[in-house]
Image 1 (spheres, rainbow, N blue to C red):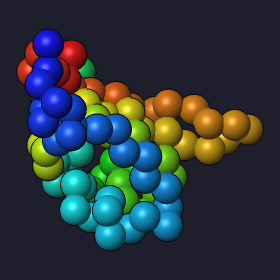
Image 2 (cartoon, rainbow, N blue to C red):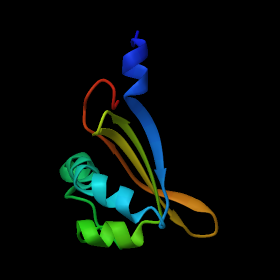
Image 3 (cartoon, rainbow, N blue to C red):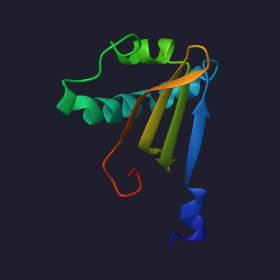
Length: 97
């Protein structure tokens, strides 16, 4: 069970297109989690995954789970006749899984 202080240092964040500064803060970690999660499939492909900047500019909704400033799990969504998840991953930690 987590202590009270541990609950205060973890959380879920939802980042929309207008949250550019927040996206940029976590972009490298999000990129690393996604790349690691899809490496056994030959990597992640498609619009929005050519580079970190492409991901920031073209993936409209990010949901991340973090502990302190460490990204543990990620869900990325696009808007196409509603919201559709296009990528997900974890850092492999117990918290991320």
